[in-house]
Length: 524
Image 1 (cartoon, rainbow, N blue to C red):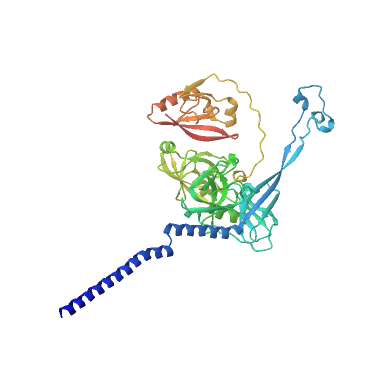
Image 2: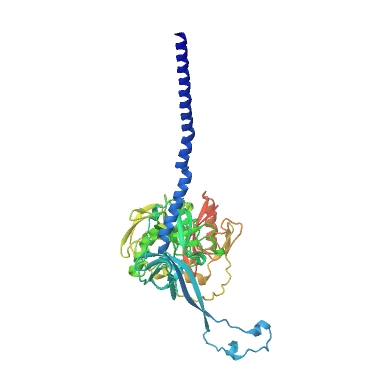
């Protein structure tokens, strides 16, 4: 019995050992196999996200490119033929030119200068707004063009260039609409919500930089709400501008900036560093919200109708805010045009407008946009601060004249300035030397009682350096009116003892031949 029991007991131990070994092998195999099988089935999250982003870029580019066009605009500029006298060049009084050369001996007093024509060509981009051939681009791409050609990219092997005509042009917003007649229904791009754009959001720019058509570049929204001051637009500025690092170069102008849904959120318009002619990572686009307001008007009316107050304004900086007693935001009324709508209301110079119809005004551009988008003939209620106290003013808006919308006006011939006699009375304070106003300027400005003093010189190391310059008329120091150089010195001495950390000057400055009022603060 003992032998049988011992044998059976040994067999049971062996069976348990074998089962344990088998289970261990199975568990070990599962442990070793499971991670490998999971790794083979599901790649890392980062790789999957990158693959998805690449697929998004490819899908958007494929969907958008057919609706992006290349624009070539040609124009002819007439220039005067320069008078050429080689006797001056060689300094030889006996040197003669043949009559057929067109030398000075052929010209007669009163003859008009001869003209020569120079042909110029501008390359730009655009995008199809309506399937019947309406295309959006930049104003500067087609401005003054006599011959506009559009190349489509919606079908293969279509190399034909279609002639286009300008439907409407709005230099104030740098937007234009052109029209082509194509034999087919064209693909279009929808306008997106530029207000919803977030800094850091992916965007794509499509266009023809340096003649490389159908180029797609990617980047992010670097900033929003930029304000641009085009050098050739005296009365207008581009606001609410989108900044991006998506590569934008010459030829991209007018092309779309799209989000990853393929919606146009901006219209490419400019780059920083234009002097070197290439992108350095800062590009700008007109927001879609501006196009939503402007483009339908251009198609319907060929122009944009804007409300108009007839005032000039500036932002309210911290010194002006303290001086005029304004709590926050606002735009300072510097000038009121005698024939403008505001002149018929109770609005006054140096009022600070802080709201329009109850909507807060953040800055000068904000006010310009609100008024421009209001209907001419309508009446607006302005909340203003006057003498540091709030009040309300109602103004019936007029229609903005063409000269303020960016339309070029005939240039006035410069007139020679008469030599001004020296003025004996001068005064200097804080490095600012002033004199009584020269009589001719006083007559030109129609100043009552010779109000104001003429800035003769500003010392380079004075607090006013870079703020004031020669030729500015100072009308007031803080709240003290100045009628002479001695008045100026007394008022400046009083201001320096007031305990303020700045002095507010009310001045007149000559801007492109037009005298404008301004408020300038000088730090102490």
